[in-house]
Figure 1: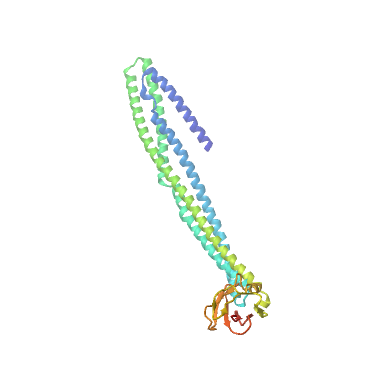
Figure 2: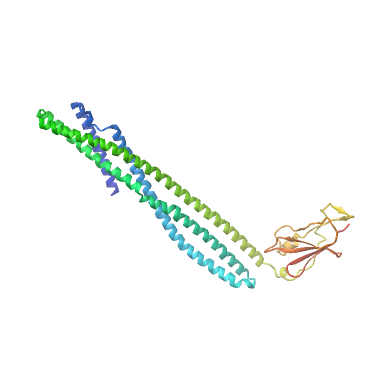
Length: 366
């Protein structure tokens, strides 16, 4: 059907050009220049055809985008329901089994909690697509300005056909008047036909300008709104994927921590042989006070082997020597381990005490 319309439009264009050529010949012969179609009207007609095709293609694109977004929202909503159900099941298992210290329970709880966060991001994306992309495009497809502009264009086309028919009528009247010798009856009919043609051409020119202005406004609005909605969709998708990627990174880090904590050897959670730090002693501190040299104890190796820390751990020296207990925290997997300084005894040992507390026994040496 669309191809038939295009062929009919081309056929009308060809007929109009042939009519203009014939009318030009008659105007040269009879001296009636007013029957020739004005160049401005021809340009107006061509511009309206281009605008009509442009707005029609833009409307088709808007309809395709709206349908695609609507389908995307429907499918994503179903996926979101499935993902929320999965996250809820994982959270339920993690909550019910969290008390027994199960690594799987903690991992499942992390999985469910963070996937719920991801689905909230997806929900925000779908809301943006529905409110700021699908809604405006659907409203514009059936908007009054577009329909009014198209209606003006159709009226212009019908009026233009009337003008062409009236031009033919004027030509016939002219030929009949010339052949019959200019009888009063033929002259009156010719004047009436010419007057009607002049009125139709004036109306056609005015309607063409009005239709062109309306179509230009609609085309500009279509281009701007469609582009803005596409950009809005891209921004919403970027935000969703960026936030989802951050949540997945956090979830991955949490599960790696649980994996490392779950692989703790039994010796690391029960008893640990005393470790003498003589070999690991580093006299890197250069401060002296009262004849004492302050050592820096590097306990990274044994702690790393025990899977308690994931970075360098150093016991730093103090400026005062009042043998008071000093405490600090170091990073470990999966949480913090409390370490303590004791300036006492004659050994430098690393021994595990009760719970998660580690004690370093050392004495500054001269």
